[in-house]
Image (cartoon, rainbow, N blue to C red; front, side, top):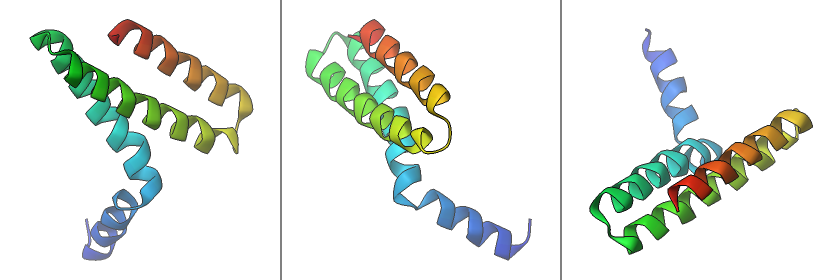
Length: 85
């Protein structure tokens, strides 16, 4: 991988859309699972909130491209929030 490709990849991961979708989804799922495993409800709630924010941003980002796929994504996030709560 050339240095130009690496710089381009790093710039893509630093964009707000990438942070608010994948970053919040990953952190939210991790914290919600950790909160369930340790039986600490405040960690679980923080994880669910982060997961919800990431799901909404992902839904809105996908809505511009494909409306049916975005509804499917929203339903999956609602199901995951229901199962983690």
